[in-house]
Length: 256
Image (cartoon, rainbow, N blue to C red; front, side):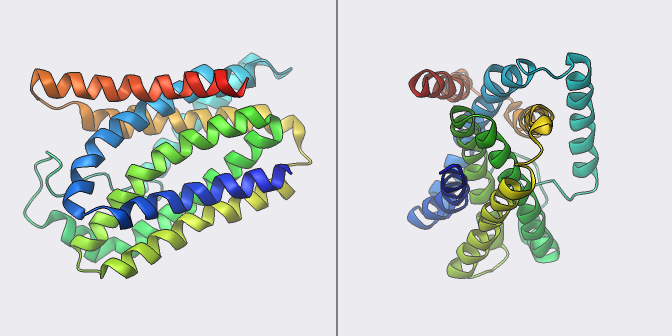
């Protein structure tokens, strides 16, 4: 039954973003990305700090070792982003950043495949994290999956827009994004069979997952929100952040 939950959660994360991208126009997607970034930042922070980390620290593992793992995880994702393996394209035409004209077209034209490969690696790791969470506790698996899905939607939609700007047909862009998302299912199944026997490692895997969530939120998403804007836009931004945090609090209580 746990394997079914893992496959369902990873499949949902990989397919949902593609369904949203297929259902909406590119212009509307570009406008929605800003709100989705705020929402997913709130979801990721609340999941890491209010749910996953407390679960890890309630285990019998040494707090010193867990904090060391958290620090190592943050440095690990920093170095991966430096190498542009883990980095995902969150900068789009009309997103408020000051790019050169046709910046996205050039970027996707030169490195579109590397973006898809990087996404596939990231999604595979997400699948392993989801598997470890479900193997620890079903409730934790649900909340962790929700956090990953919340991040996947703006990420995959953003990559879809980049591929379209590069001249890729809409159908091919959707197919490539879907195939990239399905690597999470592979990661989840591998995680179930490989990570499952090593129960003592679960607290450390949860801390690594938290370091991933915190790094993405603090180093990647939140800096995009630090722009000069009107009071109304700032209020909307804070509302989306609060909504993301509220979703996690409500889901945790409902699952309990």
